[in-house]
Image (cartoon, rainbow, N blue to C red; front, side, top):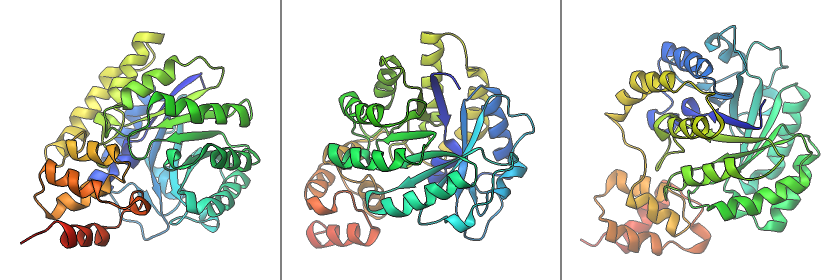
Length: 336
């Protein structure tokens, strides 16, 4: 793979908008289109060992994914994401070249031991190992360095800096990047996964592409930024930026056709992207679901939401369960 690589995650991250419903034919066509457009890495969905439903991008096994993949992948790598609480070492099967090439292991800070155990099994089964520690900014510099020392022992293919709550600046990225650059083996890739709560995704991604380093890089993006809450970096924007800076590599016309055929019909029914509510969750360093869950059942003004999000206790900012959101609102703000 080249120095700069784009990972397309619509079928996984965009699934938060559709409850991972995509028609089987759409899944095949989107994967084929992203490959034809020259995407370096295509993420096809989540691995979850619960019973499989057709027309969804949550797969109960690695082998299940095979039927959606074209024979000729050109230069694209195919990956899937595995949450360490939903897919387990015993669910893995040895790599045989017919399904995904790599597995992205996603985990929170309190799940490190589970993640390392699962990651070891990913390597033992012959897959490229991608490590995705959520809410990177939640780690102190020392904590992050200690985690990277453990991860490096597994010789991962890539480790991503993850801006889960959408408020990391380019200086934040560089701080964690330097830790990765100093600790990871020279051939390991560094990735960046962003959210658009403060509309920083494209700005920071541009800085990543312009950052002087010998390290190979991966940037995540989705079509129209389709993803939970404020959504992600837009694939069409970062591909166009790449083409303008480094020369033509990605076929934007194919990307626009995919958007027209498969994303705009969803956008007419469901919303994602920047809003002042998600901006406020980022401003107060809170989980974006505080906005998503509250607005599901309540008509809340921006001013009211500002008071609500400012009242979230420090120890609850990164934890967000729907019952807690409802209880906190009703107890403190829902005055009848």
